[in-house]
Image 1 (cartoon, helix red, strand yellow):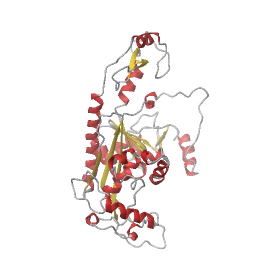
Image 2 (tube, rainbow, N blue to C red):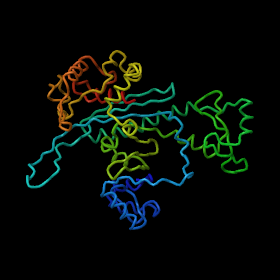
Image 3 (cartoon, rainbow, N blue to C red):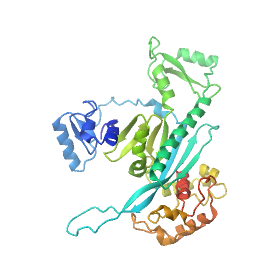
Image 4 (tube, rainbow, N blue to C red):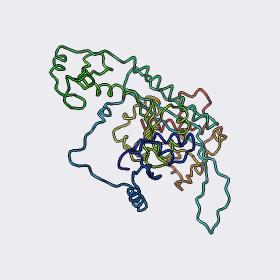
Amino acid sequence: MGVVMVLRSICFIYKTMTPLTTCLSKTSMRSCGTEQSTTTLTGFVTKQNYTVHSSRCKQGLNQHVKMPAPGSIEFKAIHKQEKKLFSLYFDFESLTVPYQRCEPSPEQSSTENYQKHVPCSFSIVTKSEFEDYQEETVVYSNEDPNKVVKTFVNELSRLHVGMMECYKTNQHPIDMSQEDEECFRESTSCHICKRDLDWESKTNYPVRDHDHTKKESNFRGAACNFCNINYFERTKKVPAFAHNLSGYDMNLFILDLIKMVEDIEVIPENIEKFKAIFTDNFIFLDSLSFLSTSLDKLADNLKSSGLDSFKRLKKEFPDNYEKLSNKGVYCYDYASSWSVFSETELPPKEAFYSKLKEEIITDKEYERAQEIYKKIRMPYYCVTSLKILDPFVWNTTDLILLT
């Protein structure tokens, strides 16, 4: 897209079903213009620029590179260098409900929808840099897909409250030595943005920046007032990761998220996919954008560093974490109704055939599935009894691999 454009107008589309061009025109002329591309959600002030853009899109030129003038590039998002104190990982599982369909006409080309994905469960795993934070593994399943999604959004709110309570209890006043004070008074540049300090400014004056999470010797250096405020405030937004978020999980909860939060912004990849979703409390990101391979391959790569690298998996399953250090297999097409979760025997190997990939699991993978189903029992199931096909098992263990 060239320039990343944050679109609040997406919210209006979902809430009011307003045409896209009308929603885009609600933003400023400078950001959207009078002509809008529904492919890239980019606005153009002149008809000529829009025509050139459309011509490139039709040719498959999805990105036009225009280099800036020498010396004009400056990194300003200094706060993004700060390590996040909390993070969250989540994943959904769905029932693959077949569509009732008729035979397509052999004389016409057509697209066939053969199944609908209905969310039936989710898992959430939290992590933190604070030792006193109680990391959680949340699992939930219900026959009602609306209840699943609403519970997911509510759980996010609850988890954020707990994170911020931990954040507040770990806030400490500045602790400076005499040498630190002398260093501050002699400073000429901000240790964050590296610009010169303005000791005469009434708004962006130098301040003593410190690490609020450390009790002693927590002075970090002299900083601009604006840099100091941004550093402190930005740490409160928690990144929430899902593998293939933009391609799958986002579509399951985005509508309910829009209804239940006050403000939401997105960075669109196109009209159907978002690179990031921003709310007051979370930044939803696709881990596939940072780790561009399958979870199975990522787990294999981590194994090269030794099984001790699976710290969270070892914590949750101290006796069986070695068996769970690979991505699990699941019979997605077989799980087409809620009734299959009451089965107490592992389905035959043929039930693990994937219509999407047009392949079946190997004998080795099926043997591993049999072993895990017989021996593994999740420690935190108290709502329902553990059935042989509960999506909790694979949903949660796969998610812990991602963390």
